[in-house]
Image (tube, rainbow, N blue to C red; front, side):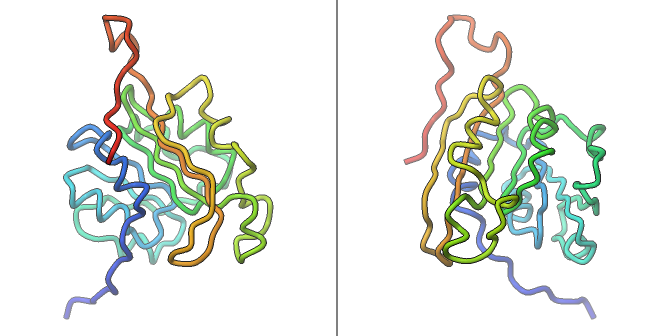
Length: 191
């Protein structure tokens, strides 16, 4: 008898909003993937997904079509140096600041960073509440400044599925010399 898994939660609207910027069929890193809701959605849309989490049970339960890896990313060494570059890096509801340089370096030219996690103020409505797990105002913008082109950024409060303070960013590593006419690249904004 095949074990059944509970249905996955819907992917973040922030990811689905910006996924059109990822190269079709591209390689995507889903960092701290948890149950794999984003990895499953991305794989279902034709992307090659490497989903990484320290929870072996979560990785074992990833859907078919998703490459899973158990790794504790907070132990100092960047364990994914030989796996890149990626056409996208997706991070939601996870914050470990020492990884940021590695995540930016892991992006291929044209690669997309989709990042969404809890922000200062969340301590007033629930967990996480420790400053180590909450972004400071504008912190995601500071991380990518001078390295990636920001195409979307929000800092505010969500009411569903529960009240939470979040920051979310979508940014692109521009390909060098990708626009011979000298004009800035144009990214199709959703909506």
